[in-house]
Amino acid sequence: MMIAYYFTTKIQLHNINAQHVDPNNIDLIINKFGEVIREKKRLVDIAMRLMLATAIVVAVAIGLIATYQPSKTPNMQVSEVTINNQKTVGISGYFPPNTKLDLIIEYKNESNVDVVKVVTLTSAASGKVISSVTLTDKPTTYKVTAQWTGADSLVHTLQKTVKP
Image 1: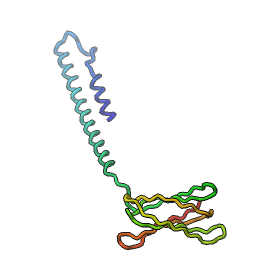
Image 2 (image 1 turned 180 degrees about the horizontal axis):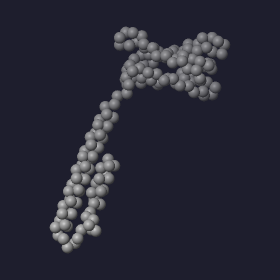
Image 3 (image 1 turned 120 degrees about the horizontal axis):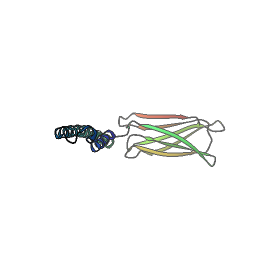
Image 4 (image 1 turned 30 degrees about the vertical axis):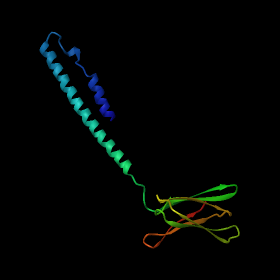
């Protein structure tokens, strides 16, 4: 687009160089004028082609953006934050839409006892899930598992192990 702008500016600034024209020679002035007009026409053609190409690129880009669909592959992200000496585990991701799923958090507490927390929820119509679980202990490592039954009647799982 900037190149097309350059050509349109050059068209406006292009003129007959007075030092190469004898003001008494009408034929030379007419020839020079014809050369300038042909050069301006050539520059206009280039600018128009560049603008057409730019318009096509912009239209394709807008079409791609308008039809973009995020990944439909189930995925899960796990993050954690400590507030008032308590760990809160944040879980977000995409799962099949309107699907009941279990979020299972497994870890060993300070007494080395296995702890399992289960949160059951349903994904949104878009498939998005955002949830958080506060842990009463301060595990050094924990495992987060998302488990659901798919349309194929199979149990699907996603699992993340977190080592803070």
